[in-house]
Length: 399
Picture 1 (cartoon, rainbow, N blue to C red):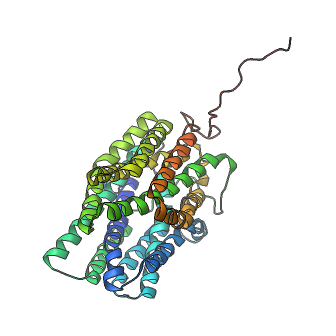
Picture 2 (picture 1 turned 90 degrees about the vertical axis):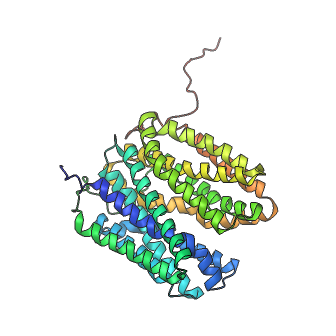
Picture 3 (picture 1 turned 90 degrees about the horizontal axis):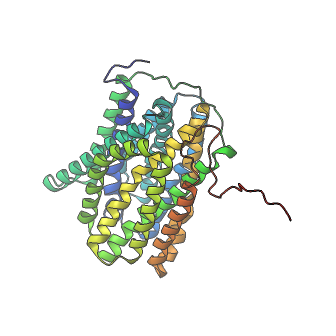
């Protein structure tokens, strides 16, 4: 099918990603200060909010039932409306119950959009170009993050406006962009009709395992790497914000290159490279004594996130095309299983030994490396897994 230059599936995916990242970045930067400074929440109540935020991710598999009634494109845009609307409303409900409600609304939008985004990307992008184009999508999101950070800190310092005004402005910008996307882009065909039921297949087990381990490692990074910066090295809000900005710039510049690299060396080699690097990063976290080196590790750790493209394109190559949408929901739920227990369990361990938390992260990366060795060099339907054990080639005879 021929598309006009400014109305392509890739451009639509990039703009949707930008809309999502703009809203979420604004919410993420401000929400902890809002919860503490405006609502006077304690650590327990903030933990409760984090639990509420993860529930929609755990229930992402339910998206498959929603596309019984609407197209995936429509569900993706509706999810972005929930995200933008939830962010817009956040500043006007400065109570615990109000924050929990707006967090849930925002999170429903975020997680269901991510489920649709993964599915549509794998359906709309060709297998040969998917890694490179997914890198461009990540870069578009990183640019939107940087725009949000710049807008927030510029307005916060120059105009001294409050939380509600920034949340409102961020939500309005996101909703305006969604409205433009809705009217500008046509309803692209998704090719093979998608199955409208939950799909869990034995032959996808390696994809499920890689997805689960990725979710577990991500919790170590998002919860405990940031905690290390604040607790051990006394990073304040401006220091952490600076790291976010550096991460955004690196993602914007590096993600397309990582996508091209995956397309060149293949998913197996890309995942092996990622997990070897993460083993080194997590071991270094456990023993780092310098704030500068800790910040460097944080940036390197975040840069590896783009390598997760390889898991998605591995699945694209092995999947029955009609399984993509239902499996995307299941995969997102699997990815969030760890979010239910990792923060709490390792939070207890952290009290006694932060070293153990990061060494456990290194062990998770090692397990992921062993799984990556099972990815075939040329994955395809019917050739999903390769054995890492040598097969017997010699027959022995009894004398």
